[in-house]
Image (tube, rainbow, N blue to C red; front, side, top):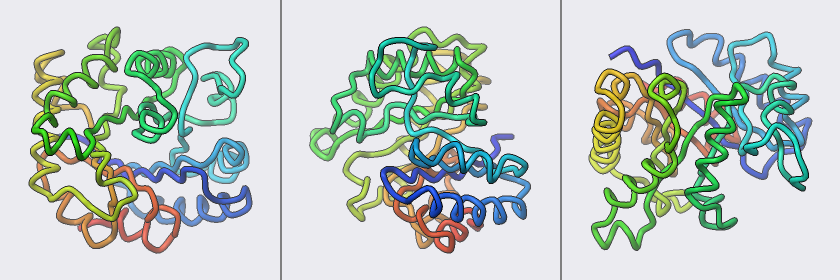
Length: 251
């Protein structure tokens, strides 16, 4: 497999502009010493311009935490793809469980955002994952299949290699609970088989699938040792340069 690992930090609604710039510069310095993987950070919208400016000449990739589907229009509170690429943003998270659970974003809405990202030259990081109730009801795979099929409607086999998939069990996000390496691998393997059925096996083998959900320095090594886990989407541990550096330098 030639899938290049991707370690991504989602900063959510934290950090001032100055704090974001300092953290991004520290992460960029670490990234420069790790040529065999990609590193991404997703600051708040208010920090994107300054962060892109500060790390624009480095290998660090900057992402938005969400993106609209239209190039422009009367969509109060939304950010269009050209507004992001104009800053130097190259990726966008779509379908994060907090957008689904707290803000009520539907699969149809997430699909529009994903298609808008692709059309606008952004690489989408497409998040899927089940709740604790769904897992305990043995519905994990059916939920994942529904989210993937709905979210990827209209994505061609030519576009699919641009998509990064992120498996984030809702019950493990911000709770301190982490899926065991076996649980995570099982879900990732299922997602890759689903992509092979939907597209082609060679396309599925090339798509990077990240694990997210209370990723920390003390569990990153065992997670990254799994054959179908190609990286991590990190929340709280990405807010400190030291802990995120240890995650980037997984062994």
